[in-house]
Amino acid sequence: MTLNILFSADAKNWQDYEKPLKNGLAKAGLVANVKTGFTPAEVDYIVYAPSSALQDFTPYTRAKAVLNLWAGVENVVGNTTLKIPLARMVDPGMTQGMVEWVAGHVLRHHLGMDRHIHGLNGVWRKDIPPLAKDRKVTFLGLGALGQACGQALAQFGFNVSGWSRSAKEIDGMTCYHGDAGLEQALQDAEIVVLLIPLTNETENLMNTQRLTLLPEGAVIINPGRGPLIDDAALIAALDNGQIGHATLDVFRIEPLPVDHPFWVHPNVTVTPHIASETRIETAAQVIVENIRRGETGAPLLHLVDRDLGY
Ligand code: NAP
Image (cartoon, rainbow, N blue to C red; front, side, top):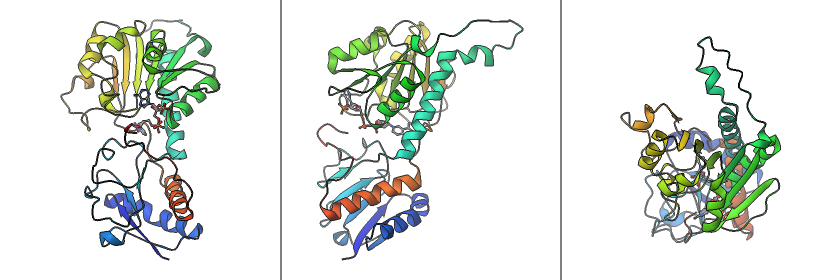
């Protein structure tokens, strides 16, 4: 049987993905039409970007799954017309990119690189940074990305801990979970990395009270989602020295408006949602593998739990 696979994303995505998807499907022995338009009732799988025009899944009566092109699903998980399984993107290329971005920004703060990059004023500042083993780095979120980044930093020697919803045991990391675990995770965290999805539970996770739990001068690195942090609380904490620096890749409104105080705050670094991108070749393989699984009755990878919201 020939499968009909709807590619519902923007024109640039289609340009990038068409060949790798078609090649991957053929290599997997799947006979398929992959197109950007079908009669809805004839579609078997939907490869999907939440920003695409498709928002009403009701007419897709035959479709077996929606395969998200993005890691974050906050813009699709609440769609009440979507009744079939939703898989999010966990892409080895994206994971590697995130490991590199997080490691780079953690090392910047750990080594105090800014002092020397911006301090070219004739002063011989021989301040030696501590070794990684004496630096506490904490990950909020121990999923595909938090675990990979945490383990990479643990390999480097950092004292790494992390926090998740459910209890975990991860080599090289101290793991906390639940409300009490969050307090423990934050209380001595010198560098905190947010790699948690945006859900009803996690919005404004880093509010005034939680920012106060951190040791004075702690650094926050947020490649997760903007609304995980209460912006006003963060600015107040930066102004009073409770937070030493915030490196932010994601924001409530993107692009970050030009008049937003983050742009001009001396202790904020803004990066334009570039921490990590889905990499076409590896992501196409993940989508093909899920279609192969769907067709052979195997469980789909990376299924989203609609009740939990991620
Ligand atoms: P994931 O595999 O779904 O992992 C999510 C982690 O967050 C899990 O450890 C989960 O706990 C934890 N979590 C969720 N809700 C929680 C709660 N209420 N309390 C405590 N822990 C909670 O996600 P991922 O693939 O690692 O991605 C994480 C996020 O990174 C994505 O959702 C996306 O927003 C962001 N992201 C950003 C970029 C970028 O370029 N900036 C790129 C990709 C992804 P359990 O393990 O117990 O379930």
